[in-house]
Each structure stands twice: as structure tokens, then as C-alpha cells.
Length: 308
Image (cartoon, rainbow, N blue to C red):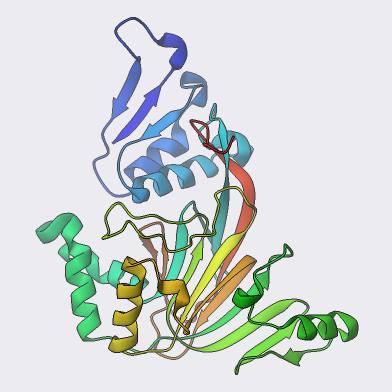
């Protein structure tokens, strides 16, 4: 459902608003791309999940004027936005929550087959089926670490290695196998059950302890939080999800967490080349290379954050 309202028209009976109920996938994007924001200067309300928020975001950013003024004009809380670009096609999609590759992206794709039969429960069905037939996911990952001070335990490169790099400017091997750094970029290649690039801490609506995938992420810190779940196999995947439900997933030795500015992901071999963004799947035919970049404070949401 898509709601437009104007606080200036508030009367004793409550808010005055226009209610538009979406009828199909992509309807909210179509509405947002043609909406006259002068008719709703105080804001736009989305009622639904992260998918409809993502549609409205992309519809607004498609309007040919400043993105900062487009997203929820009249909002009070600045929020970072990220752009996911398929480099070969020049296609760009915007997101607020997270982009992801590997198992979760495969589940999102498979779940579409069960949308009519199971509704929201389709993700559980698709996840179980994909778990039983789990493939190996191989990726090449390049990321540009944030310049801010980071937790040494979460940094895949030692301070000495970074100092040597800044002094000579050459390509050097990192601490772990298959790690390379050049011009401050870190390159990785191998098997990854999941690659998550999070814009905020990503707390789901349901969970045993309401876990968060990226506990150090903030919606306005100017960084993306990259989580790499290395390796393959059902046992490792099962261990990750159990640890995630208990909020222990970052303690696992095969999980890495680092704040970054940009991420590039290239599927290798037969690895599924789709990219998930805020519950939606971006499909790609043939060779695919995805780049996720942060757009700091390019959105504004209604309401004030508790920290402000």
C-alpha cells in the first residue's frame, strides 16, 4: 500500500491523506516516479515490507532532480543510500537496507515460484529446498576499506602490511590466502556462502532473539558494512544460521566483518550471478560484475532518530 499525505491539511478528525493500494510488482515504483511532491510536501508513507520501500526509493530517484530532495521530501532524518550497478550493462538500482550474493540471493530467486501458494512463508520453503541442494558459490570480491579507525580484529590486513603498502604503492599479499591489496583496495577470491553489504544493522521482523546481521552499522555513518561468510557446505551454513539466531555469528572464524566504501563482486564459473537488494532480485544474463557504492545522506526519512 502507498500513502500520500499533507500535514498542513490536518484537521480535528486526524490526518488528510490520499491512499493508493498497489496492485502489482513495480506499481509503487511507477507511482513514485510520477508523483507531484508539491501535493504532499510533508512526506510519503510506505506500508509494507522492505520491497515496497525499495520500489518507492527507486521511483523517486528516477525523477530528474536532486536525489537529496527527492526521497521523502519533508523528512527529518538523513539516511545513506547505496547504488548497485551492473557494470557491463550500466544498469543501476538503489537500495536502503542491504545487497547480498550467494545462498540468500538464491533463496530469493527460488521463493518466487512459491509466492502464490505460501505467501511470506515462501522464504522458509525456498530456504529449506535450497539448503538440501546447496551448490558451491565462488566469487571474486574487491572492496575499498573505510578510512576510519577499525577494529584490528575485524581487519583482514595487519597494520604493518598497510604501512608497507602506503610506502611503496605495490601490490602485496595480505595475511590470509587469496588476499591481495592495491591502491588500498582488497581483492579476495574463493568460495563464499554469503556476501552481505549492509547500509544499516538489518534487524528482521522475526527471530529467536531478534538478531541483526551487521550490529556495527549505522544508517548515516557514511559506510557500508561488508560481511563475508567464507567456505561452502551445509554444515557450515547451518552453523552460521544457528549462530546468527543467537547473535554470535561474528564470532565464527569463517565470518569476516569490515566497514567499506565500495564493493565489487564477480561470480565465477556456474555461480548464480543474481544480486539481491532489499528483498528484490536483480537478474543478469551472461557474465556479470556488480558494484555497490554508498551515496551518503542522499535520503531523508520522516521522524527523528533517537540519537538526534
